[in-house]
Length: 293
View 1 (spheres, rainbow, N blue to C red):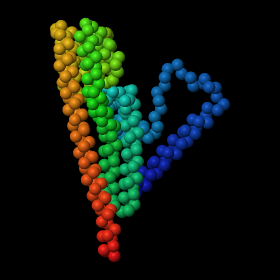
View 2 (spheres, rainbow, N blue to C red):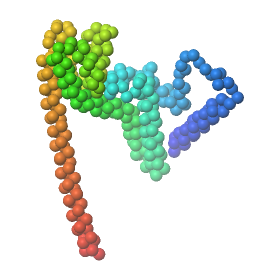
View 3 (cartoon, rainbow, N blue to C red):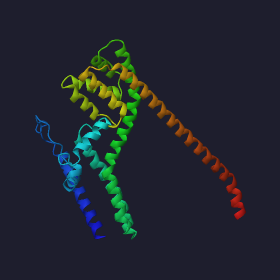
View 4 (cartoon, rainbow, N blue to C red):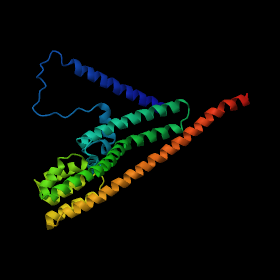
């Protein structure tokens, strides 16, 4: 109990400090010129005491400048479609999520300790701490998975437009530029590819585009990028490969739709069985209660 008392006192002192600091900042603006704090350069955002404590305790997890997995965070941001503008914003959200899970875990651990269940208190706190540390990364992986599904559906449209443009005699780079205006995850990648090819070598542009794939193991997307590289490197025809990829993607989309429909039918059948069982129990239960009386 001494540890929880110390933790509560520390939390109250930090809260009081933040409240007094906020009040001082709010009332200090009165009576001063509005231009007294104007700066020509953007100032760094001030961190709260709690954020500073977390960064000091776990710098490799919450500090963008000292993160051990900075490359993994950047890769997740690319694969998920940049839900956060910078890695710093991602780490700020990670601090918020960890604080929420830590507060809930601390409250549950305190409640268990108050009920003299001291064995389960650290276990519950540890589980919530682990969940709070993993939550931002799990969310990014879920977003990347959803974006991969959207890219597969949009790839069918983009390849159809690209095939039509190439069949009509439009150049490859111009066809890529026009197809990128359709919109969607795959067409946006085409726009990124065209934009990068205008400022650097096509090999580097293709590697940058490949790094932004939501699923690095996507066979069709990697084959498409390989065909584009072979066209610019060896002048190989790209129309036939685009048409073949279009048929392959169409087949995979149809199979995925059929699998999803089969799963929906299976769940509907299970819900129907559960509804029938519930109806039977609702009819029999009054008679069973009367027999017991």
